[in-house]
Length: 323
Image (cartoon, rainbow, N blue to C red; front, side, top):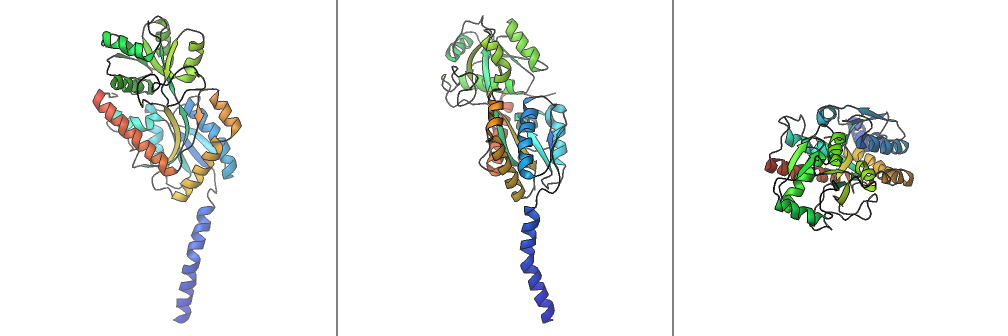
């Protein structure tokens, strides 16, 4: 009996060490990152750029798997159903936090069903107007909109998209009413603002910069809390007189809920190293994209929760729904 007890004690003493060794060996095979949108967009480009650097630190290949469909829902649902072992991650943009408020059955809860890893990038939008509109500042736009309620129009790439959400947040922040003109994509939306068929729009800085520099659109302000390198002379909307206004597009990484924390911490550390790489940072700054990381996995989870609650409240108040 004493001999058996001795073996049990020895086994228990060794167990924690074995467990730590098993966990610290992550990853032992390639990691898949699901991108819930088609290749070529901001999310895809940021994910591929950051993942390539992460792979170097992890010592394993990271496979980017584009799974577009249903405004990102299909990819999120696939990630949600994957084992929480750190070998399937999900690249997420704003719609990840917004979509569950817009549709009756998104198939996932962004707060309960996923664990944050880290932010990867922030992309501000720019408020642009057709040059024929007699305004040059945000205050002048607000004054004109108040004098002509529901006459000014704003374009977006679709109901519930980033431009739509930013416009509704702006309307409520300054107490104005403008009519929403949704399109089936950003290209047609900006074409109609250029043509003067629609008054204005909130657009990604990267797609508006050439039109603003050419004088075909007039930029009034950016939606971030600090100025964009692409528009150093444009104020933020906060600076332009709308206190604390901020609405930026975010990109980041999450994993299925239940993924071991030490795995999340390891992945977070690799994101931090990746976004601090000078060559990578400079490449994206030229596109108006600021690579940045969260302070911790928990910090990104809290960020997603705050975004989800903020946008859910807006969706309810504005009555925004996707059919």
